[in-house]
Amino acid sequence: MEIKPFEKKIYLASPTMHGEELKFMQEAYETNWMSTVGANINESEKLIAEKIGCKDAVALSSGTAALHLAIKLAGERLYGQPKVGHGSLEGKKVFCSDMTFDATVNPVAYEGGEAVFIDTEYDTWNMDPNALRKAFDIYPEVKLVVVAHLYGTPGKIDEIRAICDENGALIVEDAAESFGASYKGKQTGIFGDYGIISFNGNKIITGSSGGMFITDSVEDAHKVRKWSTQAREDAPWYQHEELGYNYRMSNVIAGVVRGQIPHLEEHIDQKKAIYERYKEGFKNLPVSMNPYDSANSEPNFWLSCLIIDREAMCKQVRGEKDVLYVSESGKSCPTEILEKIASINAEGRPIWKPMHMQPIYRMNPFVTATGNGRGRSNAYIAETGFVDVGSDIFERGLCLPSDNKMTKEQQDVIIEVVKECFA
Ligand SMILES: *Cc1c(COP(=O)(O)O)cnc(C)c1O
Image (tube, rainbow, N blue to C red):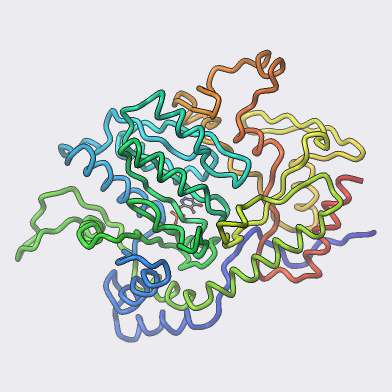
């Protein structure tokens, strides 16, 4: 079959606007609330808190800002308020998801802490509770865990919660990618002691940018609002007792968020249909889709991903920034599939490269379910077959074009192109 490139690029995940966004932005303009105060902010916070089922939500400039303040709150609750110029986690280890976007873990470093990466499990591609348990055996002093729900699929958050409770540790829950996904009937973002969501341009709903801090604590919400607006005290002048940030969401951005909220379920339905169509389309290929726990969780299906069976992988070697592969009949690899997808003017992406493999975090500890995952020589790996789960999924997996404006016909073409890779 002769496949022609799409005239208009098919993105991994791009913003989908509906009209109301513009109305609320215009309202901000016409009422002159062109600021970090206004009705769009108040209304969006209220609607998000209702959707998630939490007491309050605080609108911030990004998901990363929300993570930073959530992690700082946890740090201060555990270790007290640091001196100015020092982080709340200085000298402290923090357990973190390993296979995720670096925004999940960078705020630990902003606060002077050291991330200890916890390996991934195959069932949901999220933090492995067994590896977490192992980590508490090795580092019993750790009191904070930062956990993400990857690609919109809830992780084993009950088990993780139980392990943290046993060890007296707090949880920061990164639900940036999973807004609208639920686990045992509860929305992600509500399971941690502190939670966050993101409205980055490619997320399930967007503000073009922005994020929210999710909480059941009125004091925490108050504190985050205060910190995000330069930590002013209640005084006639600018009075400061704590370090502040300029992290508040703009009322214009909040207009976009407000206009998107009613369309969350519709976006999820579209993403789920995309996932199901890929699953059906690939049923005779040596691949599987990113898995989820269908008994307990309902993902938001933000990104559809696939993983190639080990036996069906052609040779692929990745350096720090370059990659080579050898094409082989009946086999393929993420690089070949991503190249083929790009050649028809569509966008895929490798799986998040695990944090323990990143040059910036190369010296940080990393724990797998079988013990410390560092220092495995190639000879050891060859002899035992041991690779950590994260680097294995990174090696064999990829994210497929998952834009909710993609038509069924366009998706059929992408499915065809993937099939050809295995011909
Ligand atoms: C997008 C994302 C963030 C950061 O959100 P921003 O709003 O882009 O700052 C954090 N964690 C994960 C897992 C993400 O995918």
